[in-house]
Image (cartoon, rainbow, N blue to C red; front, top):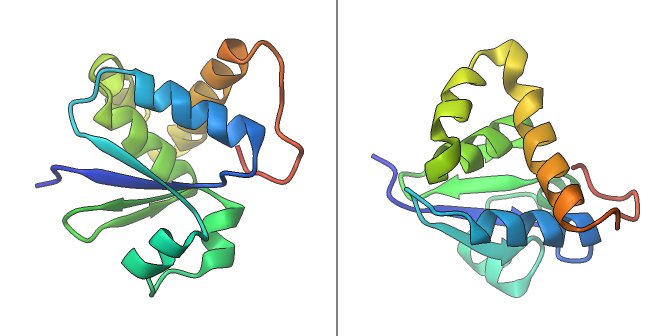
Length: 123
């Protein structure tokens, strides 16, 4: 049973920081903890994870040992949120996974009034 999720995100990317803030501001059924990918803390906690991979796309580590990347990571982030768990369940169909990323990216962009990523992030 998952009781906590750690989200590794690119702290140098404006959109990634905004998505992080958006996720953090939502009511959470499963607590989300945010750690900058590639940071000393991330390397200490998760030495087996490839830093380049965690910087290239969001990575979520569950307290049960599960590791989620890419679309699956966005899906589990939505699943952790109170108001988005139902949507996450609907997006659980593999063909729908990319929409989880789009939901978070769109919400972050709207909240950030058009400021965008510098193009290096994978949101």
